[in-house]
Image (cartoon, rainbow, N blue to C red; front, side):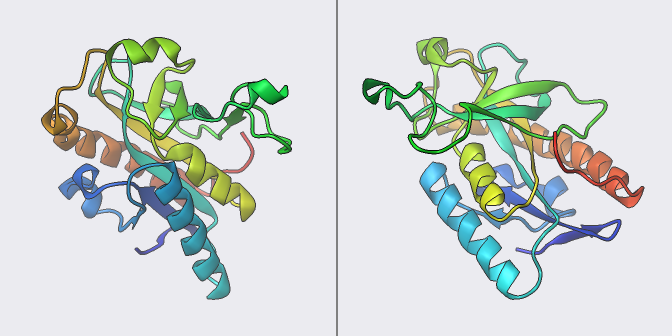
Amino acid sequence: MDLLEAGGQKVLAVMAAAAEYGPALSRRIRPLMTGVGPVEAGVATGAALARLAAAGRAPDLILCLGSAGSAVLPRGSVHQVSAVSYRDIDASVLGFARGTTPFLDLPAEIALPTPWADLPRARLSTGGAIVTGAAYGAVAAEMVDMETFAVVRAAMAHGIPCVGLRGISDGPGDLHGLADWTALLGHLDAELARALDTLIARLVAGHRIGAP
């Protein structure tokens, strides 16, 4: 893991799995690899941010990137995350709105900065289970993943803005094995790298990414 420096700003790139980290991205970033799922993502990101802060190297921005599934967006397309939610949390039996964490003053969806002028925006739902086939019908967002919400919450705990970038690897049909997920990852590696170049150019030009 190395921080990317551009325009005097330090960026921590965060990804889940090596399969998503192809040659195009590897020429540009050395990300924090968290492992798969919200628990691993939250633990790894929080620990990394604590270590960086203790060393006086806290990042100015976190970029969470990788693949996502979708029932409505074209496979192979790349989207910036306009808002992220946590689909696993449901304390409605206690009177809390589904999707909100009890006793935490946050909405069900957290808005994120969207700094790319030329990339479509989409809402993202994070959860611990892979969504496939008919299960998309229960998700109130255009994309699904397993890490972004946890990374965003770790970033919020350290007061650091976070942006999300996702390439659509699968959906809307059923997944039948690992190859159904990995088939487009090579293509998405190149597309995510192009989007990263655009972000770097904005940072070099002096743009600071903060509140959405």
